[in-house]
Picture (cartoon, rainbow, N blue to C red):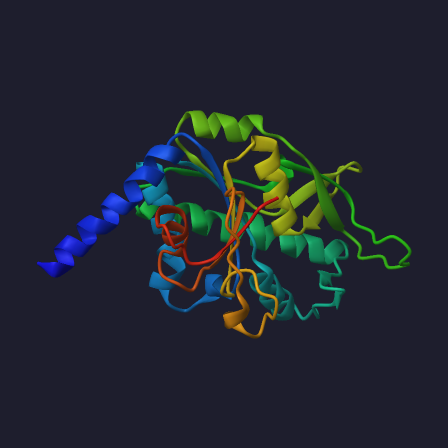
Length: 257
């Protein structure tokens, strides 16, 4: 009986948030090593949460990563992953692998996972949504190849999904002004998407315990209070998205822009 009462209390705690956020747009950046977990249940937790958000009338847009899967695919092809300042060096051959893994493998898997939990989802290759410029660092003579920075978001296909209560799932690739495919940072792509859609919230899912001053010490997570804008949550915690959004305490870090 106590367990049942506790569940009822949790639902009642969530009710004001459900009422407040109904019909609002949330952008979720889905990334982190937990995406590669051998535990299917762990991988599907996000899909379950997104299905719940759909059910209570919150419009969710997902931008996903996939760096580990790209590295594995490159290694299987006999290529070596190379990084400069945290950015993957992406030549013409590498960007084809990146596009295949992100848009043709990971993206459909996430869509199918959401559908398994009775959600509606549609996958988009980032090249159909994002436009980018070639990434460069001022005062650094480094050529990363086909690495781009998202500068524009085609919002109409996303808004059409939202009108139909369908969750768009977008890979972090983009089309450059030269018409070529570029590999982009998924965090920036998610942020640009949230801005373009005037989203109520932007949630970054990673594999650390929120926003940390010391990434090696989860005790340094600092929860900011105030206007809810950007949230960092640990995707390894079961249903961390729902706990952060629909409970008073939350489980991650809120940042006021």
